[in-house]
Amino acid sequence: MKKVIIVLLLFTITTQAKMSQCFGTTSQGRIENSIQLPPKGDNFIIYNSLGSLLGRNYVHSKVYDAVINSYAKLTESYPRAKYKYGETGWQNGGEFKPHKTHQNGLSVDFMVPVTDEIGNSVYFDSDLSNKFGYGINFDKNGKYKAYTIDFEAIALHLVQLHQESLKQGIDIWRIIITPEYHSKLFQTTQGKYLQKNLSFMKNKAWIRHDEHYHVDFKVKCKN
Image 1 (spheres, rainbow, N blue to C red):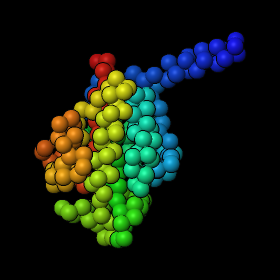
Image 2: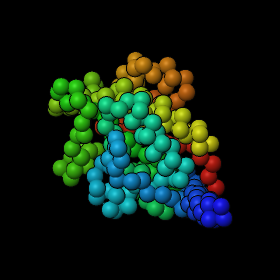
Image 3: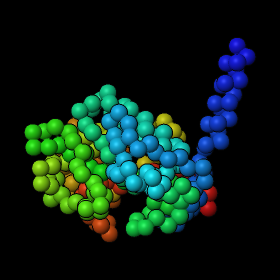
Image 4: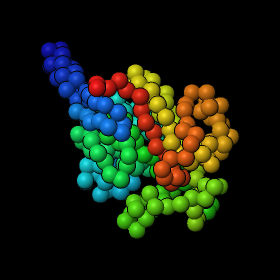
């Protein structure tokens, strides 16, 4: 019994030690005790292994839990989908070129999930030749070569991200994806939920955001 108590205490101390503290804003900030996202899981991978090696996938501890838990839930609710996440930020935050935000552990890019010509969920290539996926251009209908964006998979992911965020005592501040795709997301089975509970940036961002959707989480940070 004593051994069990000691193990639990050590687990609690370790967990508390890893609690992150963000400072400032997503566009001017930093973070302490951030956590690096794993390069892969049962239904997801990082955009490129180099991103993990360079340390470009650190996030706030609560954001980490929301992201990982949402992927776990999606293995049950939408097992057919394969997800890929993009860049997040440095271990200590700060300027993160070429991004204008991603500075305090609260910003995560998610590459759009896609299907192939016969409807199977697949990963599109993201390497140096296409700026690690960021150089791909999907058309207004969500098509690029043999790939088609799975808007249902995106909608289910956003709903799960939101629900898991609330469990962590945080929220989602905004979602950036090209306005051309808003109506397609709102036409999915989760469309009403998205419109009621999540905020999509209506204006065009400085880049189109067609190959990925940017999520900013809402966490109380120090000035």
